[in-house]
Amino acid sequence: MNWRSLFVGNNFLINNTYNIERDYEVIERKGKGHPDTMSDALAERLSNVYSKYCLDNFDVILHHNFDKVGMMGGISEVGFCIGKIASPIRVLINGRASDQFGDQVIPLREMLEAETIKFFKEYFPHINDIKSILRIMWEVASGSSPGAVVDTKSYRHYWFKPRNKDDLSETKSLNCNDTSMGQAYYGNTKLERLVLDVEDTLNSDECKKKFPWIGSDIKIMCFRLGKSVSFTLCIPQISVFVKDVADYMNNLDLARAIILETANKVCPDYDVAININMRDKITPENVDLYLTYTGSSIEMGDEGFVGRGNRIGGLITPNRSYSMEGICGKNPVYHTGKIYSAFAYEICKEIYEKFSIMCEAILIGQTGQSLVDPHKIIINCCGGMLTEYDLLPLIKKAINPVVTTSKIINAEYKFY
Image 1 (tube, rainbow, N blue to C red):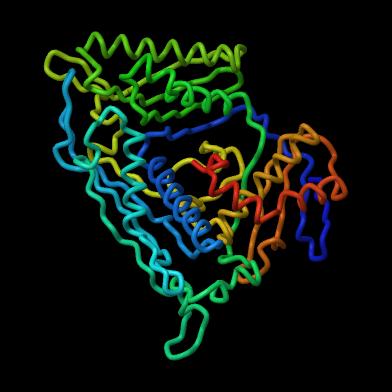
Image 2: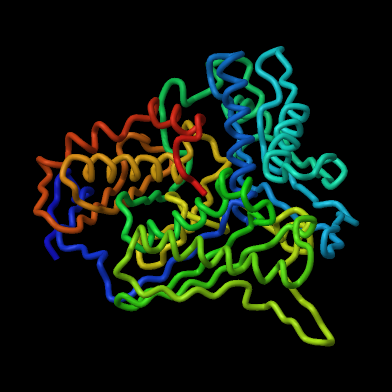
């Protein structure tokens, strides 16, 4: 392995012999309406709307984390051309956030609950009274950070109730909040592009207008061996748009045709087999189909929580570098795992755009240490013979907390 070191202490490693073109690939994508993806998306939306409120009103982002947001299934009743929610979907708005800045009170609950309602209206546009199918569970606290000793003047006493900007230590010295890692890659294999394109196509506005029966909870598991590809998909159908069993089966054929058309565009040299809704059963005694009222399994028993779904880049790719870090909903200013995932993505993007080399990056941070000086940086390059002199300017450009935070709160990263 051709490792090269840069900084004192061997904290920068380059591997120029990394190979992502393997004999096989396993790729998973939890689609837009999957409960885990929805939880990630909602957590990030809450962080973004809170961050923007703080910037507009205080010119600084106050402390918060909504990375424990979750959704718990309700109970639905469906049939051909009919459907309803009999017991509401429970939405857990959980975490910590500053509810005031000095003597200015933040309308925290009103803001976050309003954003949650807006979120579900966008996800389930065919449901008129969205509030009637939800039960919001409010569990956001404004407690101190661990370590604040009673009867002392530790800055942590004011962590979630800052009196002014002087109580926000990150405005003076931007340090890692945790010992953690971030990772990302840039440049997709053909199969990764195909999986992303299939879900993007099926969940596109254009496709939904043409085929309103397509639910958003589209889950894809894809396996490739050589040029032979096996797709296994779960595609819910929205019950109010499905007339009968024959209509349901015809819809599956339409979905299969869309997937094959996409595959022929992205990787025409692959032999693609498609399996959809493998649990469906149609017998004289029983008809068991993937019919939903909302288009998501969240309506009937399934659950979702932040950090259980797609990684940065929008896929679950065990053949690539991987982290279990749940980054959605976390503070976009200093949270190590989140910021370092964004830094890693930017580093890989810079390398790809300058050298046309696909690569992966891993950054490790130490709590309390400078955020812009990672403890370790590992870069795996697929081809080429890059040196520290090639990469150092790109790394310095990519590690920019101000630009990265702006991109995060404006949802420019595919975190889920």
